[in-house]
Amino acid sequence: MKLSSFRLNGIDTYGAADDRGVTDLGARLGAKYPDLKALIAGNGFAEARSVAEKAGVDAKLDAIAYRPVIPNPGKILCIGLNYEEHRVETQRDKTANPTVFLRVAESQVGHNQPMLCPRESTMFDYEGEIAIVIGAPGRRIAEADAWNHVAGYSCYNEGSVRDWQRHTTQFTAGKNFAATGAFGPWMVTADEIRPGEVLSLMTRLNGEVMQKATTEMMIFPIPRLIAYCSTFVPLAAGDVIVTGTPGGVGARRNPPVWMKPGDVAEVEVSRVGCLRNPIAVG
Image (cartoon, helix red, strand yellow):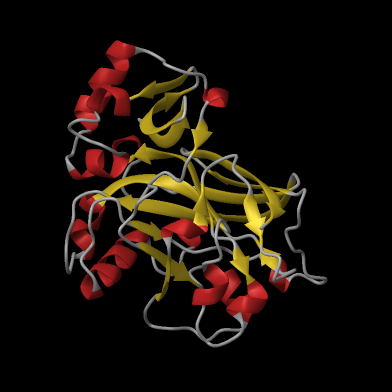
């Protein structure tokens, strides 16, 4: 099942999506599950699927305004340097543990919404990634149990303002300008993708392939990320772990390739879909 957050007829809601369109689950289940995060926390997937099958489609996909899949996550945990090719191109040392930094919800937009190149920078870079959404909460989760805590998978463009990222040794400023990241178009529930199934990831800029990788190429696989992050912070339903970008980022090309107003960035993940965003001035 594909679950998305969106605006329909001026109302923020969520629903189930397929090729025909979307079923507005918020209109039908909102009293019990007011948003997608609440549906996940309440393990309401079976109920949502039943309602969607009975109700049919409320709107075509082009009639909705996509929001980030989880508009109100408690935490967005981003993993840096998790593909060897990217680690090498950044000339960073190998580490025994994942590199983790945080994004805030305001730094995200949904599918088809413009990612904003800040007027303070001309170094706006793409980073295609796979996002996992946490379902069952947990603390100090064992790697062997980690898949049981995944609610679903999505696409993520972890847009980075490189000059601000390089102001200090900390990444926060360059990773959190408003509307510089994108998350969507939906979450594919974990029952649709086998634990450990190999997923492919591709980033395109104006139709040209810039990044290409598979989850087999991760330095720290998804169970390790869940175990590590849950050791220092409790994971809650609706939390997001963005699992890292492969090699080929714009900053490391010669000459560098930056996203600019008028460009279109796409992040495609097999078994999930394609996240598409135009670039505009912020």
